[in-house]
Image (cartoon, rainbow, N blue to C red):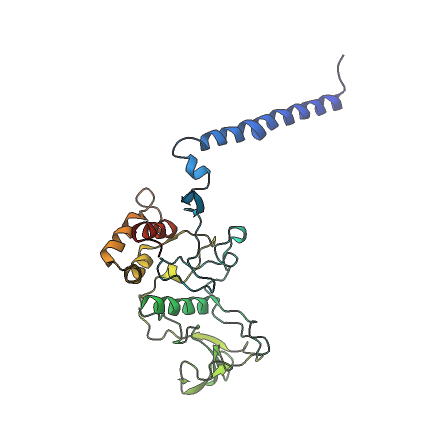
Length: 295
């Protein structure tokens, strides 16, 4: 007996569901699990976990901070790059800051609420560079940064809007409440003011000031910028090199010994031409402890 068309259609759909459930819901996942157990792949499939004395302390694929409870760097360890994931390297909050090159003006804090306001990407970079420079004993200055570590950006008012004589100049990222003296005294003969919370500077022309910082700053870019995921486990060889003198001093050894450990934990470009060389911070710090002890 021939079944009605609507029943035949439903039976065909049911058969398709069963077939694809078996193939994609059972067979394919089991195949992937089996592939993950192949020697050489099993470690990666399990998260590339790193153990010490039988305790998992991290993953070679996920970075972590080497700071104390106050957030200050542990000077005996190599430092990771900044992270915008949660409070730093939080796998449950992986993210970037979403700030781009045009983020150069800070949101000033309300004097009644010092915790309010937010820093621009430029100021974040400037302040981080100063902090790294102080930690490593090098010049932390960068182009377009003030000596105080904020973005060197002026708001310039012209008599005819976009053109004409300069009538007023404001250092937009230097708050009068904390920095009454701007980083530069004058601009085109006009005295520079510090910024005040609540004032409207929308009509000003944004004018970044390069300053006299070197074209090639001593502090590498990855030391002052976060990765897109916020979980990058690596730093550049240049940032590792910058930290070697401090590590050698704190560990009571010579720089050549520390540099050899850095070289051992530096990976080259993928296939010899893709990406950049990188240093895994967690693995390197573990090697430091194994070589010199934890204390």
